[in-house]
Length: 149
Image (cartoon, rainbow, N blue to C red; front, side, top):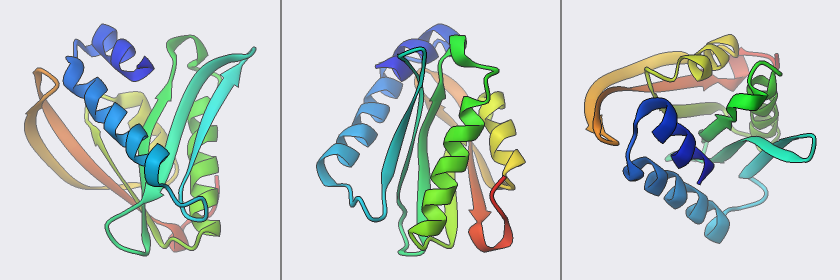
């Protein structure tokens, strides 16, 4: 719900985005493997301030980073970096060789975090989603070619 509310205020995205996030969370809640998938919720002063999921990808050696979010009040505290760092550490321990993610180019702060960890942009494409014309991006990180930041 936080994703939907925040992205509606910040970008004017419609409820299609909240529905996408709800499906990702529901899929995780009903069928995740604790050995290879995990989710983290960051708190600041007892309040939820961010989250990220790491789930299995389309190939056995590949994980997917999903639903990274840091609330506006918690931005600038390094939570996004800490959440991604934790998920990448988990991915390495779980034996993944690569982590991929899908995002949109207007999510600039998240992109800076991904670039800081060495993710590389491998695909971009215009699309119409969430009530807007956007540019989707797929990023990938080779876990054996990087070290934890």
